[in-house]
Length: 74
Image 1: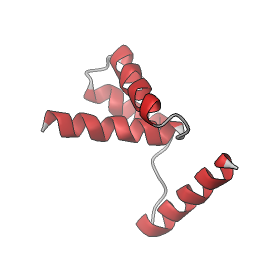
Image 2: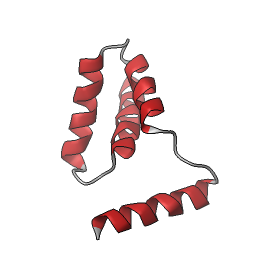
Image 3: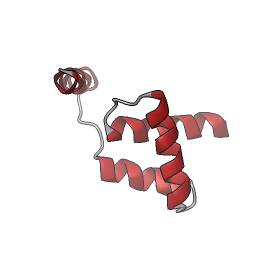
Image 4: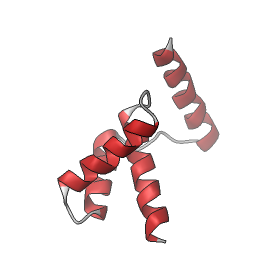
């Protein structure tokens, strides 16, 4: 049931924003570059987001990590 809800939410997001979300690998690459190619740091940031949203898809977790990093950096 949760998977269905996540798919519906993703489709709704695409309709509202008129585009598909970036792929997981693209997002992960972006996050890794933001932390000076430190894969360990990138993984820790993703895991932190996973603790906050345990049922979220990977791409959402990575996006949240990117957004949090941007906010924290001012």
